[in-house]
Image (cartoon, rainbow, N blue to C red):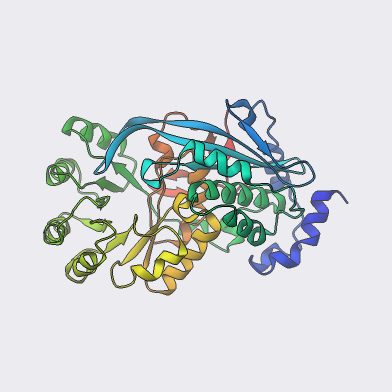
Length: 399
């Protein structure tokens, strides 16, 4: 028996604690073998081909390879807090017994992380001492303890290990979690704060999507909505990115938006104004959703009474392991759940999409906003997320 076969057989008992019974007795099928073969990308196609690549670990265990990669946006991305045309990113691979898993860290400015901080964190992560990659809880507890914060860097390791483990056992993560891909929701498409000309252009790009997410928080909010409403009556949700500082203005806007087919309002005021947000929630005709106010599982209790739901993003939550815990806990507490994203490649988006059958809403369009995606994976069909059947997170390297 080779090492991969031994690991699969020896780990079946530990998987029983976290994964559905259907994995038991699994024999590698032709489809899963093909999926793993496709993941055996050589250095000429992978992270080692990127400038600044580094490696940690050894062939005795799990090896990490990682390199900076700048995401180029198709249009300027304008929020209440600022504007940018690129997003810093770090691409990550995990190699074990010839199988390659993929992950990434995307760092929009508000996260407080950078390429340098992520590269420093990853250089401290040594997984060579872990002989069994299926022991995700143990490994990710170690990763979390390497240094405080660094959520996006930790997410990169989490995603790459979930991809690796899924490929080793020949199953996708939505399947391992017992989720039905047909229950994946529609995703919204983001319309950023911009000129009337650019809003109209972005609306043509949004034609395939049935729900629009509109960025707000500046003095042109009503104008932007009126432009969109002159073009379509499709449902919208709005993301204020903490841009309203008055609870009275926020309430006025919620009532105004409720008359314009709005589904919910995301992070209407600064997260520090928790009492004002609770006041707003009691009076608003629309659900109030936390974004900047919630990163990890420990943040959930503070949301009760102030928000109707939460927006989970892998780059905030430290990855899939904690995101899954957040989603199930939030639903048990009666909160609505949204799965969101940063501007990311299809690697990160496909990872987040594995959770999508579990949530109420999805905003997984970050890969559609960039021009240099290195992967293909989850797709959108008639506005709805379509999950790949391939093992792991379902992302395939293109370059």
